[in-house]
Image 1: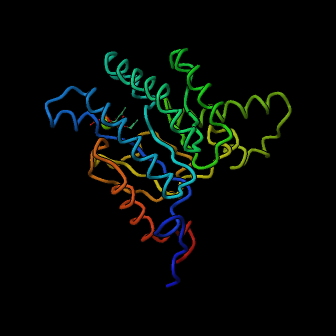
Image 2 (image 1 turned 90 degrees about the vertical axis):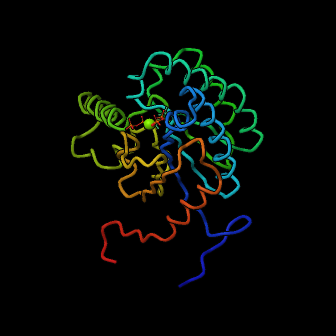
Length: 244
Ligand code: IPE
Ligand code: IPE
Ligand code: MG
């Protein structure tokens, strides 16, 4: 076996793009007799730890599933609490992200978010746009199917206007019309909490991602768990359909 190339302090080169389905806040709280909000609060701390660890490890893209299109179905009180935490994160954390050279981006349907949150997102994206250490993407009000539908609709408009031939619609044309147009596909998708499903996350983009499912609940996630998932990733053989 060839020795793995090394980056930063130690260890093999990490995957370029890691995406995480941050699940299990509610169960973490329930196990402690606490309200679900307490789990979400601790979940925000896990985000902080994970972003820092990913940056230090030299990950280029970290995409975090924070709120799905389907999460709007939750009780109004929980949605309000989650939006409150998001506001706090955007107000307080962006300075730290910026200081650490991290670029923040948000993907998802902004039309369903409060106008003040949209403004905070726009300000944060503008402030951190030049940073190159790590691109942190938050998926908010995000659904993979909705994203593909929107891409199809945009391409249909181009075709109807006579600017695009139907034959010119290929994989690249779809990819260009997704929120993630200028990002590489995720190499590794991690889901915490023991659930083994994709829940409408990066459906198109994760066609050849490696999946790691961990039993740990999101509020308990941190550097050690991220390293373990990356270790698992490095033991996989990626084939992309070719014979091994
Ligand atoms: C993940 O934790 C956070 C969001 C989906 C917003 P959950 O709130 O889904 O926690 P569980 O799955 O109920 O434990
Ligand atoms: C997926 O978790 C969405 C996020 C982590 C933001 P859910 O808890 O909403 O997923 P399901 O309902 O268990 O599939
Ligand atoms: Mg859940």
